[in-house]
Image (cartoon, rainbow, N blue to C red; front, top):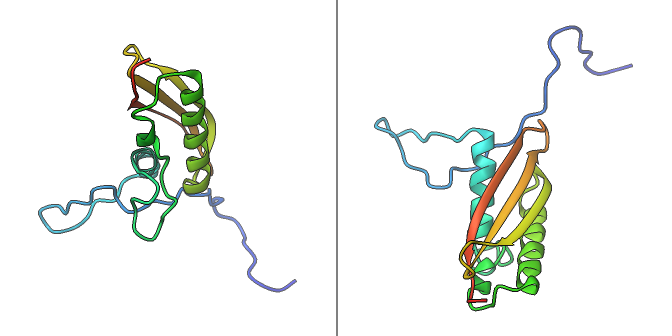
Length: 139
């Protein structure tokens, strides 16, 4: 057998990658504070939900495109389209998570949808949940 042989020591646990901060602001010394992995994933999910395809330079398909629903009625069909768009965008653009569920429901106001996403960080299994409100047309 050739190559390095590991003897003893604590096993290395897989790490969750950390992306560039969503809104990087330097501190008093000019350094950027990097978010922890859970916050980095949450910020990326927020960016996916808030971005329309074609809005990001060099990434024409990035984003869930939920703003396209703004003039649509709050119907089962609209909620199913939102569900599918969110699930597809997350599977394409956030590889650090396993999506446990996406729920799109009518809000208290019939002019909004509530999108709830349950997920786990892929390497560690740490659960997370995020909720977003999406304006739509009147029911």
